[in-house]
Length: 170
Length: 118
Length: 100
Image (cartoon, rainbow over all chains, first blue to last red; front, side):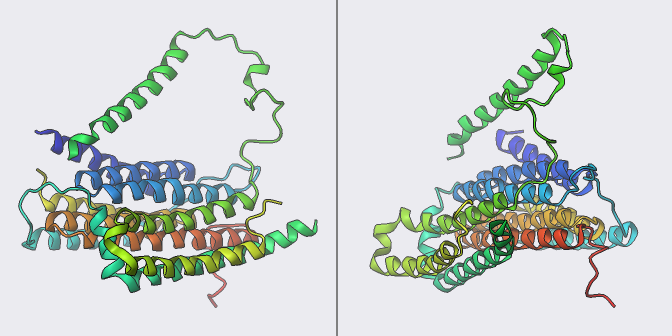
């Protein structure tokens, strides 16, 4: 087994294993920290796929941003004195059935299709290609993404503004 | 190209090994003479105030939100910046339209006082 | 070298785990994390195809997904926090104001 395969299986197991912990852990803090390992594992898989810039973005945005926000969300929504971080599950049987169907269908489609792939090849850094695509062929999607960010920004400020005015008036 | 990542994997391995060895070593070899004082929460030498599991102010969350939104903006800027010369004036105009949209949000935040701590 | 199918099956597994989380968990924040898992699996598929086809477009699409995820994290969690302030719970069974 060569080194590439070793790293692939290592990070694949890390990703799927920690994803299991995220979903099935009783303690929400454990879920949040397991999510970090999932994000790390996916970033490492991006590196193995020669997507270096995507991997760095994954770490920067998911681990450095979204995960921190999620942990803030956990801290802001737990009861102060009773340590109530445990959460239950529901609808186990129909959910199992439904997900088994989804998993079967996805794996069947993925393995049955004869994908048109380029044979083994190593790619150089992709950041130049991404930059050229963003500014030439994908101008409108990029501007729409900008508008989405603007909406998110204004929405977040609006939601928090109520608390501010309360805090300031005190 | 993947060879250039070996130092990162090495670093990762060393970091994990180091932290595990240090923590295990101190529990294995360290002397244990606990007193009541030693069992209190360590708060950099201060007397502990309140509990560790406290809900904290929404202001921290707000800073996180603003950080992540500007973070994304940088992610879009970086691929443009590395081939700044190839993309020329057209790319420059496009990226400034993108930045202008963000600028509206930034000015809104500023006027609303979201960037002030108190 | 690992074939493309391995990456695809891996992301299918990740997506399925996310679906389980959304369907079975009660806590709104865990549901939120499961959605992030599903978005990540889709990103993995896009990057895998991009790498095996030698086309950077797939990797660029990942940035749009990440943008959506970030906006979702900012606003979605703000909504969850606002809900918690009003109802003192993040249990999605108890948040049924629209039901009658």
